[in-house]
Image 1: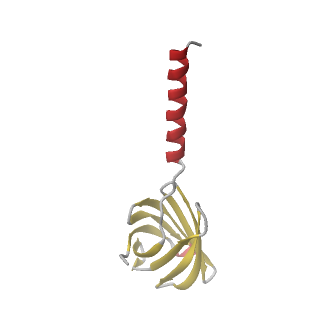
Image 2: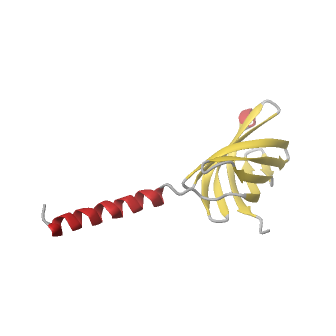
Length: 123
């Protein structure tokens, strides 16, 4: 391989490596989030206080119409999953994060399903 060909090859490899690093960045969701939940049986406005345990693992608390509970979850890129248990029901939020907002679907165990939107409260 001549010097020009090797230079082009090396440039292409470095560009792909840079793209791979960017693709592995995860959204930051640390803070207090006010949610708006809509289901077939009603609506609610719970709050989540979220913290990053590491790059992809989350912990926090839920406070809302269902009570209070410890929350665990994951963030992978901009995809978020939160879950907690109340009254024997596993509650799961799955959605996407875009800066200080998120949206997605919620499963309320045996109580039903719905959608949610959320906004991070300013400190």
